[in-house]
Amino acid sequence: MGIINQADGAGQIDIGGKVSPVSYHVIARDAEGAAAKQVHIELSLPRDWLVAHGFKRQAVLIRENGARTEVRADSQVDVSDPISIVLASDPTDVASENELSSAFPELKVH
Image (cartoon, rainbow, N blue to C red; front, side):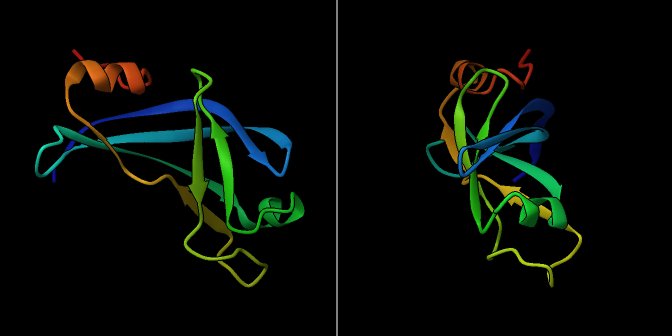
C-alpha cells in the first residue's frame, strides 16, 4: 500500500471526561480489495502526561470537524513504557475521493 495523502490536524483528546488540546496526523493509503482508500489517525503524546491524566489504553480523539474517533495504545501505558506513546485509530475504508474528503476534511483532495 502506498501513501496517497497525509495531513495534520488540531483537536482534543478525551481521557475519562478530561479534555485537552492535541495535534494529530491523518494518513490515507491505497487499499486492497473493494475499498479505494484506507485511512487511520495517529498521535504521539508524552507517557508521563498520559499517566498523569489517567490514560490506560484508549481514549477518544475529537477531530477538527467534531468527529469522535477512538484511539488506543498497543498495550496498557505505565511509567515503564517509552517516553513517547503513539496512539492510533483502527483503519477506516473509504470507497471514493468524495467519501474521503467528506469523512476526513483534514486531507485536501484535489
